[in-house]
Image 1 (cartoon, one colour):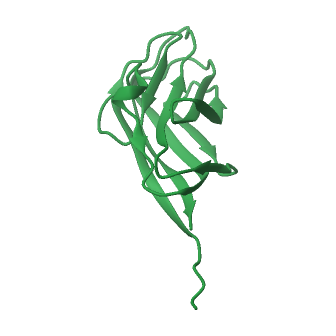
Image 2 (cartoon, helix red, strand yellow; image 1 turned 90 degrees about the horizontal axis):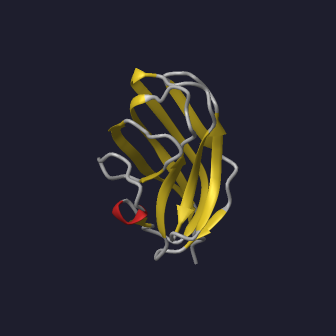
Length: 139
């Protein structure tokens, strides 16, 4: 009988440009839209049972970089549990959130959304857009 080997898959993430407001939480996933303050508009259902082992996401601010207050990016599962990817505090046009040491079990009925928690900036970034991947190990 053949042995079944696990495999890695990637789920693509993206968001269109938006001007984030102070002290606001935004949600996004793979939909080609701007992040919203409601998770229901942006949650996806996992296509497989398995485990999330990593997230790599990069934002780019086209018009203004904003100041260096901390921004946190988490993976939110089934609108109940948040798993921190990374907190970044840079005044750069490009901000990268990366965590390849995750071990988050998921089922094929769990939903996912990325949760971006914005600070009260001194100067807000503008036209912030991004893309990246969720890396899963599936049986």
